[in-house]
Length: 511
Image (cartoon, rainbow, N blue to C red):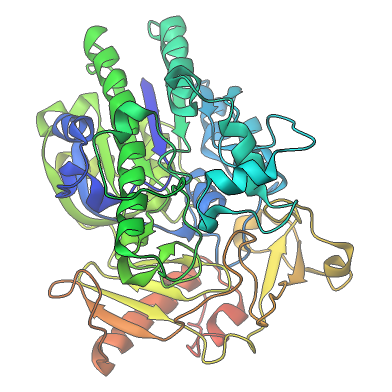
């Protein structure tokens, strides 16, 4: 068996033609949907980037126990488990977070890997004295660096070295993928994890893709929104959306090159292909840019998933309504290669759903460490927040004390305690470390843009009548049922006691 796992970052579901999008040109995502089974109710798990990838590696939610961080020594990661079954695993990615402190244990789980340099503020090209005045003139004030340590300076330097389309990261990542396939397509028992940071911001695409989306904007470069409330005028909004569309169209084009390759070499008959993302992105919907700070509306939480499997080619073009989520990726990849699924896994293999739609869960819980805890049953979404975000006490449970771009500070670790194992930690005790707090006194679950959580009001939405989540309402019966399901799922994931108390919900009795 051969498997290609295609992962894009910040792939907005409703921008894709195969999910009803009409404003962005994405014929190759549509083409792949016609080759595969398309899942209509696929949701995130842990957020944002690396927490989502830990879910994908382990088949478990991790945001209930810690924020952004590496794989832990006790984590059972799918590429390692496949290696034990003599499946060769190879990672190709320009997602530079894998090579920062907070993602540093993921890539070495694969038999081999390739890192394509230059995305966002990847510490790639060295410029001791960057031309800050010229940069300020080139870019919109939204993109100006706050100080000399701002990673946006590094991003401005990096993109100076991407002039020809072949020098952009997405084309280089796919080129590396084609090299792997040229060398190995006749072999058996391998998994290629091909991962593009695009269409993650900054929304920087070659001119031929940008030309498809004209706007009336005439100002400096505006293609990198900060995670903040909407303040920009209509022309600026259209410019940012057009730049996202251009970057997504580039992703679509190179996906098409991959589909052409599979056609040309008749690989559909013996190669599984899984395509998904980690989360979506708000492009001024709900008067917000980005992710992390605001509630996880459907634009962020409801994400695409498409699966082609040679044993289920008769189902090509079909759609599934079953409620699925990120934690299902890991057991599905294991099942593709006949590898056993560890008992700690809470996700479900989706291979049975390729033949027939059937329920694998009643509800899905998702969220980010220190923020709201959210649940959907496919009909409703419910965002549950602590009564006071500044008073809650949270702890990080870890043996790998690293944040996104740094190790835990010694001041944090001085308050650490060694506590009893969780079931999923394989008998290994963990450090229990009080979570850092931001300037607002809130637990800081993510070191990126933002500076705190906002709009932290418990709300309920009916997706059948209000998919855009514009009309929150309260219903004691529905909320009680969803809270009961939330508690059951959290308990199954061995959420610590404070994960329940902060939300004012009762912890179920555990056998």
